[in-house]
Length: 298
Image (cartoon, one colour):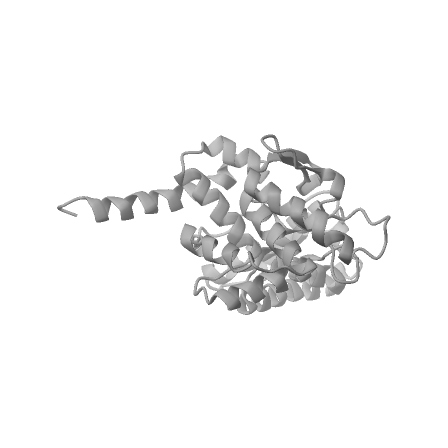
């Protein structure tokens, strides 16, 4: 059971970019659940056999803990089982129907357009094979709003770089595929990487992965996270930069530019539009800021 928890925490670290404190809290919450399952009549319970009554008993075992603590623990279990379902490790989600206290959560803070520009410009002069790869990856992530897991899963055949009609085939959560258009500038950087950089990284001509590490193998989520962290430090941008923040920035900037919520939902691969609606709060904040700047009485 520990192996599944470790995989989930690695996912939160690399793809979601959560802080060390949050990861530690999730680890404690899920370890508490695994210990609960290992006690008494639950000794034979495994992650796939956990049911809703068992989780309800776990919630009741928290007694009179603070609502924020209970909500966090339930959120941790829900997130964990969402991950397990998406990874195909369990067939159903036993947290369906498990309710928790309503606790507000802070909205993600996207990068400004200027910060994104500075990040991308920091890589423009990198002429090494891995430098061209890095530029292509981050241009592509900001151009599409892809999840980092989707980015590193791309194969060469998944991208169409024809000027004016460039696009890519993306495999998202639940193995659902979607086609995402790519603006020409991002397509040009990906083409430059393929033509001038990828072959110098590729030790195996049969390798289909689009983005490779220096051993000629598919780049991992952790590898991309380290690359992004390096450039964030190099540009001295004070805002937090993670793969998930780049995705947030893409969505926020698209909506501020006039894209419809439904269109952004399709690009992000959200199954439910309510997931996308969080970005409307961010764009509303931007509208208020612009109003305060422009109105003579504000």
